[in-house]
Image (cartoon, rainbow, N blue to C red; front, side, top):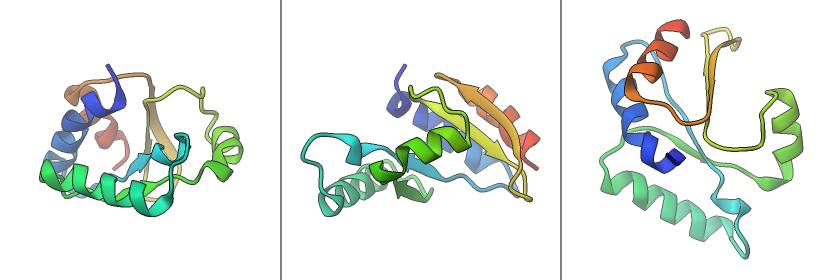
Length: 110
């Protein structure tokens, strides 16, 4: 399962979890010849077509090593990180997941 395939479950869990916020991170700028304006428009259109009211950040590849080191990321996506209101990592899922697991993660982040 790719990160795109699991997004509906994450968005669903986010909509059902009161008092939480979800931020999606797009790695689309990692592709060859990708430019920020085109990628940002494509990502916005992708989310809008699905009626996802979730903010999306387009990740800058320049920060890849620092991000991977800071959050001990395995390099492969998808990875889901849940932070509490103080910014501490409350839960994580390396690899694909399902709606129920996302809901559990959001509970840990409260």
